[in-house]
Length: 247
Image (cartoon, rainbow, N blue to C red; front, side):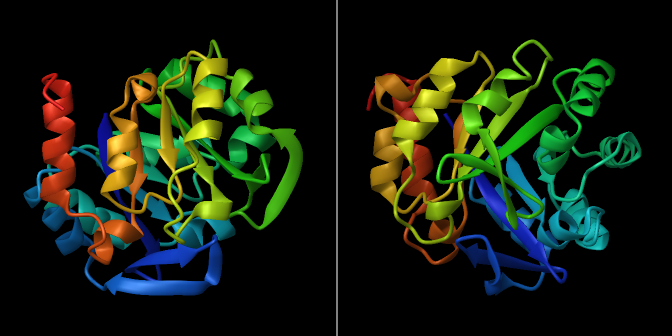
């Protein structure tokens, strides 16, 4: 079980949105590089970064902030938001991003995802964001008629490294992860699943280390880490104990 601390970028700052609404953004740090280093110093092993402006624009809008993050952490970084072409993918992987997250383009152009997986094995993730069980795209501004599982199954044999599944209805409001829907997805496909949206406190970590969640690769935590509801040391200690069979 990997906990991925999240850095969401808007206007070069680290923010958290409420229910995916760009007008409900709280700034938590104006130095993304320093935030990345802080998460590494706390003991986290990965970093989840999203260019929120890029997700709406369809191209990178916080490139300088991502560059600063890459300079300030040696942890692998997974990056999403506005990555819509092979050129975008090439550029970010060449810069040192460990894996890119394809969201909107996974719905609009699934063949690009498959092509990218062949070109870059184990370095392409798919982000599936859902409102009411239906896939949302364009920075969550539009909802499709496709269900999460229907989209996920399109990539079953493509070589996708992971699917990041976000329940938008819970994102940024600390309601707790939607474990039921996440496990339903994880049991429907063989691709590793990362849970996102709503992780609130240590109770979510306790739930994630239960045997039925062994199928998950991990979970993303944002607001709970920034506002202190989730203590990094406590969370990581619990996960370590679980790995060692002591929890």
